[in-house]
Image (cartoon, rainbow, N blue to C red; front, side, top):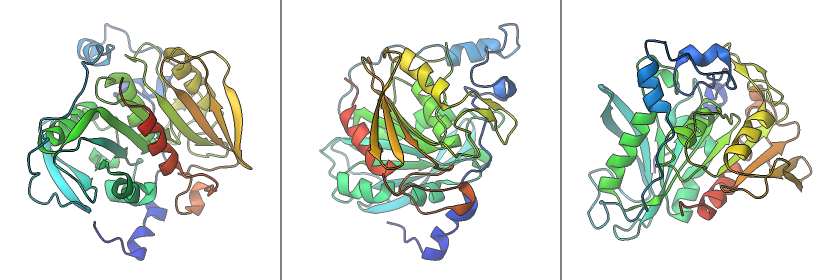
Length: 337
């Protein structure tokens, strides 16, 4: 694995997202309408393309071991290490970090986890901040930390990040032994919005998602029910728990309306059950769902990743739970069925 000098790790303090991306389901023209707004009118010149991309996806075929099972991975893919890879997507060269778990076998299909950074951060910093690399080695899953164009997701002009994600997944499935029923996505803030978007627009790819500090839902834009577990602090100053204006100027309806949207989409009962997990953490678990839906609320928590290193300017970081551990446990429990 890449060495992470303490000084370099501390750069996370300077780069995790303060200004988050708006919740558009992929294009800036919706940004200032907010996440609950009606999509742009069909008369818009871009409407035919958008309508095709945002239409609900068909139910996926049953997954299985990927084509890469039984084949040796390419150069640089050494178990227990991280490499930076390049792929051409949408006519531009893009990169992502791939951690191959220690003990990787070409005959055992593994889960694949996407891990998206926040706006202004990058793939390396998210890899360090999330704490998912040690879990990758311990639990045996492939970890992909993609790099966004202009350190962002869903807002760079002319960039289709959903298509990019699909292309990376397809390339890795051809090289590594992946269980195509166990492809997942998590991310921080703008990366959480990216994961929420994948749950809507790429339900045939991701089996479950875990947005941290930025769960989003757009009525009418999402396809199949998808398991969702979200994490959010009540003192988040960037993506306010109760909703408000984002640093980028877009509007956020609030965490509970977003979760209510997912609960309705996932066939849940209207009112969730609440469990006290620790002195400052509550879990809302929606009942009767077709796809599991849950929210961890950190009372007094900031715009932070639970269990991660402290980032004082982003507010308090709880150490009472580990988002990384809980996310992986949720993913393990929710392969595509």
